[in-house]
Image (cartoon, rainbow, N blue to C red; front, side, top):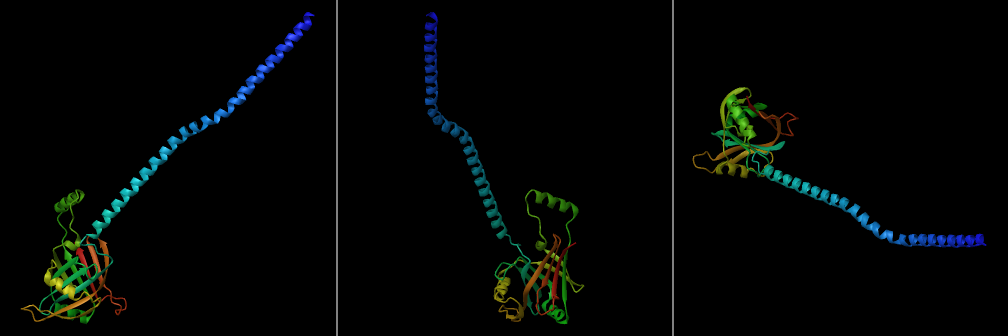
Length: 260
């Protein structure tokens, strides 16, 4: 009898335990659907630093692109404003009155201000005779500055000051086909010189005579205008070769600038 009571009580205990266990399992399963609500918050916390990093990178890239554009714009403006900004092809004009000296001007394009203008001691009539006899080679030489002056210029260039360029030299020794022909001087383009250049602006290549129109002159001004190929050897040497399609590849006129 006692045994049957124990068995029944144990069975009841077993069923109760099983029931309690089932209820706990049911509660656990019932609690599971609430978990996904917390997952997005955790993912948001994980994604927030990543998005912040991406946003920071985009800001840095935009700032870098903006700085690069500003630098390129400033460089383009400065480059466009350089008076000596000559390319590999330039316009060269020789002119002068019949009894006067030769003027030689180099322009970046036909209507631009001359980047280089000098007056040679050679008379224009003498240059015409030389060119009629064959090829003409004109060499212009100037002296390098002394060592102490060069050091001073180097220090100035490092500090941002301008260093004299080859085309800015004021005085040149002139040689025409190997013969010394006096000196040449750099000139500023005044109203008289600019009037001549404007008169020959439509001419790409050719030679002729223009009416001078100034008192004291003989009334005629000779000119020769052509395209020149510019070759830069170094900061102390440049050459200009006249481009003539009828010369079988050999330039009729070559001008050399040397700083020795």
